[in-house]
Amino acid sequence: MKYYCQYSYWQIGKVPFSVVCGLTNIQYLTCMNKSLLAFLALYCMCGCSSNFEYRSLSQYKIDTTALKDGDTIRVIFSSGGPNSNEDREYLYHLIAVNVNKPEDTVNVLVPEISSLDESDNIKVFASQNSATYKLFNSGKEISQIKHIDEAQPVEINKVVVHKDYLAPEDTHFPVIIGMLTESMSTLPVDTQKWINKY
Image (cartoon, rainbow, N blue to C red):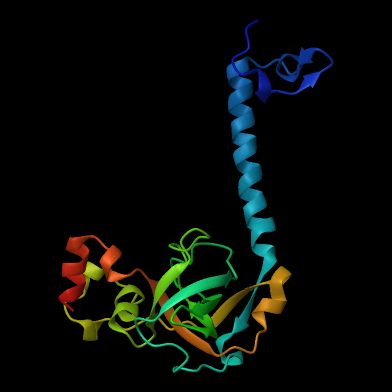
């Protein structure tokens, strides 16, 4: 019997597990793939989200002067979260340094971190009151918004924290709500034109 994927089955002695169970190699591989997917889904539901807990936004003293719209920041810590937060259920906790004023370290609460990674941690800050924040956090498709006044951000009342990293979560730095954006000069030209309409 010829095996299609020799590293994907268990062996009992020198007899492949798939032969012991009476499965053909294709049936066995299909069964293993389904089992692996089920295990990964269960792990993510149970294991991944258990590292996080939520705090009420009311526990944070918000300082709207901690950063200005357009400030360039370097993110040095992120709480992460249990999922991509597409429904804007919570805010992520970041710690960032103002690039133009390195002595200014700030706690930044943001609804999205999808554009953030270790190799791309320099971002432009947009405050909770900015048109950018309102557009991207209104819960509406951007194409449905005719005027910026129609874009009211979704109200978010909790912050996700990582239970294994509570020391950075409890810093004395000022706290501000906003979002991470890219520098206008790094955006495609058509996107720059679209943003300038508003």
